[in-house]
Image 1 (cartoon, rainbow, N blue to C red):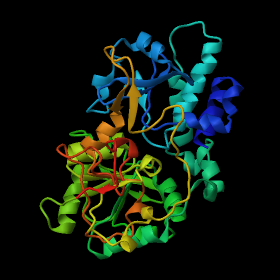
Image 2: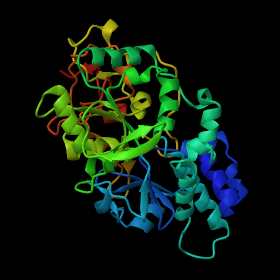
Image 3: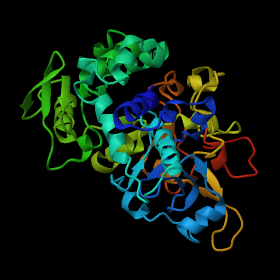
Image 4: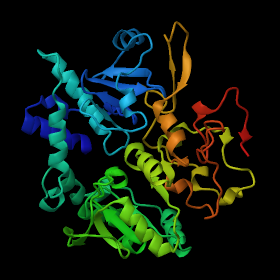
Length: 427
């Protein structure tokens, strides 16, 4: 639906070739989280932890090792790596695809490059402004209420086609946290009307009873980082934003806002001068990096790739932590579902690279793996994986002086486990 929403706009309102609207099932193998789109040359890149180009495509065509060396030099370094590494800074020269809501855009842009190359008379790609226009057309603040665009009307008409309901065990886990005295927050960049539709379908019509504080239109990562130009919180009436608030005084549902004012409210609610926050998110750029770097939160990365690449030999959980029957649902047999390992892009966590200083193939960590180890406290494949654990469960954490696979729960990616590997449990 996301792909179709963008493609239809480009074809009908920007005059792009109707070929964009035609997809085959094989096309989805191209979608791979963690790619960087270089807007200057139309290439999509999979990077190593030091900025080495591990794999690349021009449009949807995978580049050969020789073509990568010709384009990026003997050291295969991407020239904008220093700009984005450690900052996740936005730029008009590239775009980072790191969540599933945004990911179909990578396939769309690659196919746009393919089509433009067929009849290209200029050297510079200028399609990005049209992609931005398609995003604004489909996701503008008033689109849900007005039934405009393509995306929101489709979801409103048949939410069950696009949304999976939350399991009872995850809802029970959330209630247990609240009953244990924890303050539960929901922070999303979506507007309140869309958030309500999602939560009512996924969690149930009583979802507001689960959360103490709901914040919509948060515009992450700016919610965490925009100091001193902080957006004030606003109250909502019938999903319309009202007057700005100088501070937050009580729990409730708010729009916009900033972490500083939220943290003051958390101090008031908990009675603690430095309340400890565990923040769950699936986007490194919008969730994990800013919450860790600017607000010192404990961060839990929800990483679906872990489910399909997990080792079947190694568990990072302690042997004596929980009996098997109390372990998370991840331990049980699960239905195979997307995402799967991409044939075109390979493992999310590692890759082999040849041609570095005349060496043979070298196995290296991806830039995404490096970010996980740096900014996440732990990584899990889903909330389901921990829903049946006791609330005082102790998780091994990512740490610079521990093996890189310690911190993934319940099993690390197979590609990160040293070989030869015997069935072991890390204490």
